[in-house]
Length: 76
Image 1 (cartoon, rainbow, N blue to C red):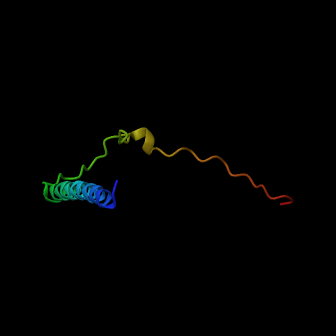
Image 2: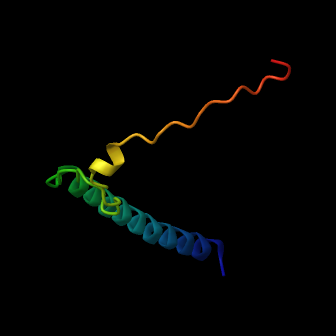
Image 3: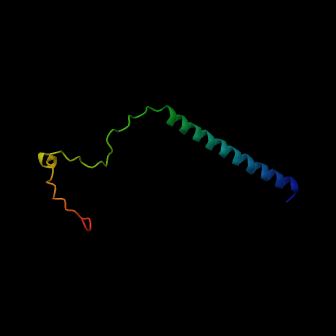
């Protein structure tokens, strides 16, 4: 192989790689534009996996009786 053939092969491969790179950049830019200008969806107010809320009842509202308080000081 002569030097001219090696340079020709390197230039041919470089052109192919450059075309593939430009194609990838164009695809990436198209996807970015599509994502930017598509119609936005409103955010969900309730998460999908939210636990069910417990409804308050009269039993929960009643306060438990307070036990007698004893003096715990030593020597009092």
